[in-house]
Length: 115
Image 1 (cartoon, rainbow, N blue to C red):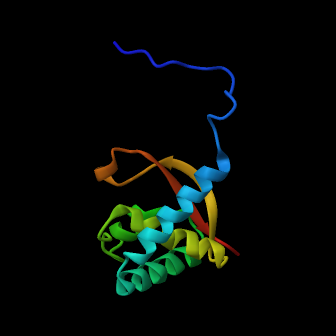
Image 2: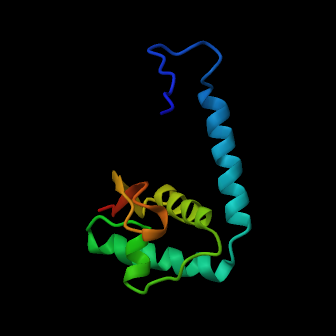
């Protein structure tokens, strides 16, 4: 068995929230640039439709309902949901296990439409 070292305090210099945010932004920008415009438009339309329903949803629900296909890469979901959140179409509702079988129930954001 391998044990993981657990520190009960943050060691100065080990956590850099600003660097983390910069890396996230760079990754989201790269993913957005690699996304086919036709898929992005279809995904945005699917998000708007789900948002109007007023019930919580995640990316897997868009696929399950046949509203959009899988993107070329899973990282392309994030920029679409982020863009719609910035536009005020959706807001974060909660976190929970992903419904997508390909990600083994990893943590996933659940969204809901704004009023």
